[in-house]
Image (tube, rainbow, N blue to C red; front, side, top):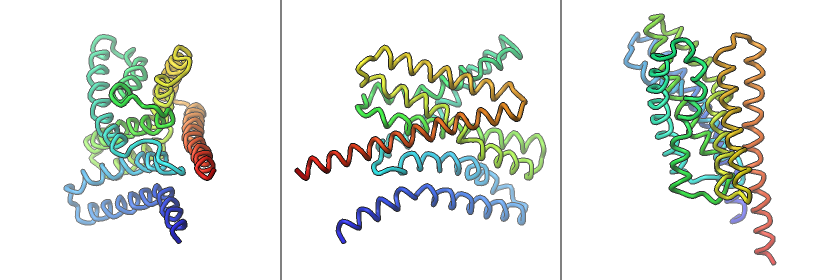
Length: 271
């Protein structure tokens, strides 16, 4: 019985992302129905927040709790999500405004560089302060920073859509579309970039690890830029497939390698 309890608790933890998704969807539907039926726009901030946070948070919880062990401390993940979202959006907003003032329409080509760089500010601070020894936590920290950025950006777009269309249905469509695409956007791009960053401090060959990090950053910039400038559906599908595939592979590797390490430790303790 004693052995079954930790297993049961671990199993529930690994499925917690489903609870987050279900709770978010139900909450969103309830708030939307109440707002429409009562015609009370006081519910709009709640609708924006729930609609923006549900899917990115689900991905974050899956990355953090989906394996045998938790890759990164919860307070670090939460702090990165909050600070990463605020610092990232503010930094990107200021730099994008200045580049648009100077370059006009050509500034669109710099959006990928600016936003992908802005989302790395907080993870870089975490690396310098925490000096992580386990590179497998990087994917979770990256997803956290991307989640914070994606949530605040989606809320901003949702509010703009309300002002533009004066229609809650238009906002609902905007939130739904961005929710479905969020795992393939900021969440994935920052996730695999920070995963590469986390390997630099402990790498035997830091030069090669640093080059891999720069390569991951440039890959994120390319995917981001292609997504922004292309109006082709097939191109967008390719970006989604590539981004999500890389994200899932890295999350899987982080948890599988931890599981193998746990089994080796258990065998060593048994001896």
